[in-house]
Length: 388
Ligand code: V47
Ligand code: SF4
Image 1 (cartoon, helix red, strand yellow):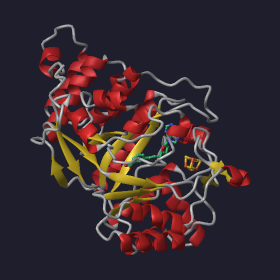
Image 2 (image 1 turned 90 degrees about the horizontal axis):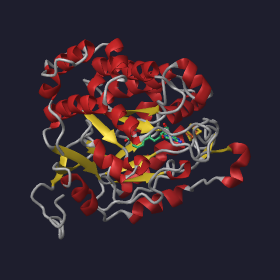
Image 3 (image 1 turned 180 degrees about the vertical axis):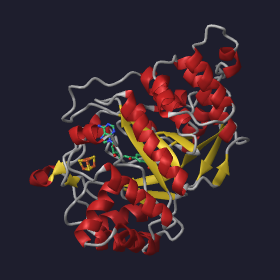
């Protein structure tokens, strides 16, 4: 995929002086400021794309990562009532939701016993009866079936609830989970950190500072994590930059984040269905601005089940170096909110072809970005059929 090189923009005498300064900073690997971050929202997609692509190339060259994981969602019963959530069912509407038994969950893991997956991603609703001890023992049993598997589990929202309910500090709660086999934390529950916007879209779950404290505690215990940001609803550019600023500061302190994942708000079947979804152009701008602003996050991920495989493929030209590929993505959180992929499944072969089709070098990774398999020289049947 060809993107205009930054130098072409810099040689344009009519380039706005703010954008010229930002481009020069990017070339010199200097950090851009909060106000410059906000200014980026006024720039053209082509300009943003060239900056983001330059940064991606500097970090990763042609390498584009995917992994093989499964999602386990123990329940969608949730004590919270986030307005954007199409997935959860309040406890009072319990009969409309699901609660998997421990045996159901372990059977799901057993199904993949011989499969070459490297990660199990466990998240769900916040169920008042599924607490810290239940999940610690569950993880232990998952590891007994698959000792080699990486368990990435529980958003900060779930962790905050289970620690408070068990009356333990975040440090003690996370230490117990770690001892039982939890390896890292996913990035969910961050939404948008601005307190006013957070109060309007999800006022009853953990606060922004609690989210950040949980991730900081995890990093200090040697558990890495990801961070997400929900965009395209009632927020404004300054709220998005504020969100990224808080993450960038924490990353300076701990270095424990692997990946930043901007999540596009989908408006199906939720209390915010009146809000129109943003365009693909806005998605690509969001990826680019994220790549430019988050200068200390090594990876930028496009979560393809949400935006669809075509936009995910396009995003590779706008700063993204990771497609959350799976062999069997069983998550329901997006399909229930009207995501592009209703039955999100991509085979490794399809993922590899999708990455190679834009001239990138596909690498299967584990959660920590160790190389599991390099697909550069592995040619699948019909791969060369369409070269345009
Ligand atoms: O926190 C819920 C989001 C998140 C909607 O860490 C919605 O590797 C858009 O965080 N429209 C959970 N987004 C999922 C998540 C995640 C996914 C994939 C990989 C990783 C990782 C993390 O889903 C929630 C919320 O921000 N979400 N409803 C919606 N209607
Ligand atoms: Fe519950 Fe998470 Fe849905 Fe909020 S986003 S209602 S915390 S499942």
